[in-house]
Image (tube, rainbow, N blue to C red; front, side):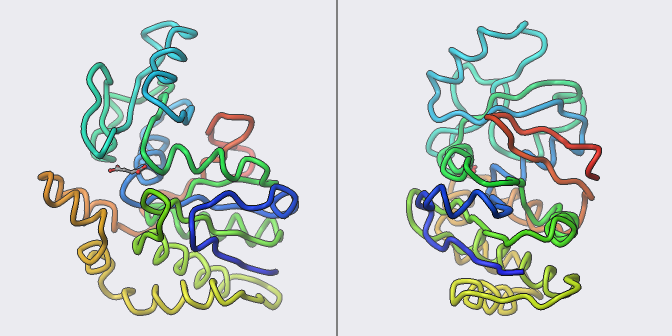
Length: 244
Ligand code: MLT
């Protein structure tokens, strides 16, 4: 199995994705919120690019079935039901609901990798289950850190390194790595004992602290809370319960 990390969040060549598993990470906070919501019974997520697209799409569904979630510049969006804090995606809010999600990086990332053979939603919450799924599928893997408005993000790269570490531990055969995978693995080892330290060094972690959202940092650093892996197919993120 060959494992790579897309260190900069730009669209990979679609042909290079068609035979690979892709794992999208936006630890602070989109993919953490998505995983958290499915653990609390959410039905599906539709990631969209803009606030206007989210309002427009909501009109296609019965109002009681669908929530709008996300952020603009990390802040609550006027008229949306939920922000992008995983702590808001509790069962009382999301059980049985569809969420149309607009965020700055995470909701955009799914479109960039939509040519992937299997596209998974990764976070610290479900890192073990995600590594299991990658090794079970046996395809080459691309970890896709969503980054921070086009540049590398420390927390997404550290989590990509943790995925690689787990895959190496679980894989039956040899795992080959690119320099990017080696770099992510080394970064993960540096912060393994204190993941929140990486969040405190990161640009987006500091922005959340400045905006009074510091509680999201230790919350998103919890490892292996949920043994589930949401999957993005044809524009929608759902649980594939048959594969769990
Ligand atoms: C994003 O998608 O850029 C983030 O999740 C932003 C955030 O939650 O603050």
